[in-house]
Image 1 (cartoon, one colour):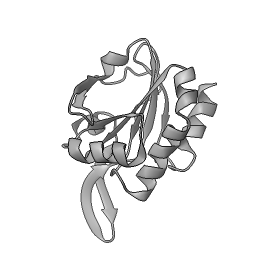
Image 2 (cartoon, rainbow, N blue to C red; image 1 turned 30 degrees about the horizontal axis):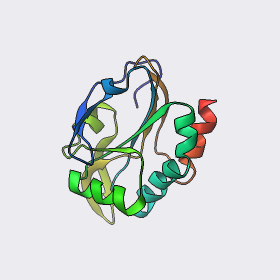
Image 3 (cartoon, rainbow, N blue to C red; image 1 turned 90 degrees about the vertical axis):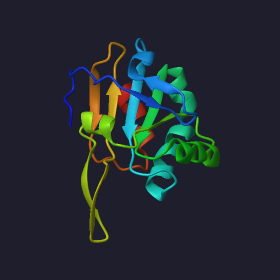
Length: 151
């Protein structure tokens, strides 16, 4: 995991609409940058809907929420529409940005080994520094946890 106080690595990725989004677009605003393994799976849907259900609280604090996975733009658009998600979803199909954030690597599931995205989150302050990091998060209640920590 990257350490608190480090400068968050800059990136540019396509969002769920195919439009380029970079971290610097949010300079002057706090950002919750969360990495999740796969759109429309149970845990990832729980996590994303937690942000959706607390959206007003994030807006009241002027906090942007960005989710990154290695899903395609098309899969992210479907995910957004299926669950009415207000968050920005970014496609990192090769895992390059997730790798910069120590959130991509070898995983095992059902006896298979593969590369994938780890469920990690970073809160980035208005100047682009990492304010807080969460490793291997529990998707249930994660948005609430972040809001509590933002106080």
